[in-house]
Image 1 (cartoon, rainbow, N blue to C red):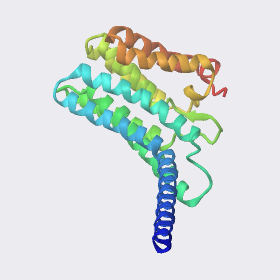
Image 2: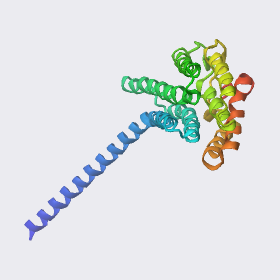
Image 3: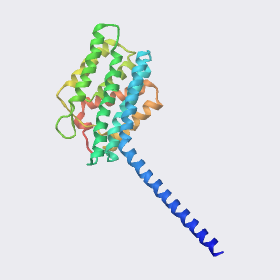
Length: 255
């Protein structure tokens, strides 16, 4: 009887030790999972932006003009969100491992922007005309130049118009005018000049600034997913033009 009691106690102790170890392992795994998510949440948004750009390119090549423009506008929202998420989750702390994630994330964000706001957007300018194809290539090169030399050396400032705004203006006008190439050519040239200019533009931390900017962003989400395309296009057009016309008075980063 005493032996049976001792054996029972031994198995109970072993069971509780095993359960405790399993619980601790699960907690450790959960902590690692949260850490991994915090480091890669912004990267996931950048990848989603890039996928929108790739899908937009495929839609353009297959003649689905409306879908290609709509996907660019979704990429617009994703691009504004990824930087805010990275900063909110403190993804860029001072350590070697996280520095690698931040560096890789910045490169991934640039590549996603180039895909969505460079290549995908430029395809709305593509026609059988040689001059239009040259304009298409010039637009891609201007986005590339803008992404390579965006750093102004001044905190919270860009040099040259951010390509998401030129992209939004082009796709919205294309939808509203039914792809009127005469208008798009003039706009494309103007956007190229804005992007390669040496003018300064403020960081547009929409999700980390005044409440009304967050409301504008939420309105953009609602317009893309809950509205027909004419009101949504007018909304994004006014949003983007306001950034160009009133960059400091409206869109300076006042956190």
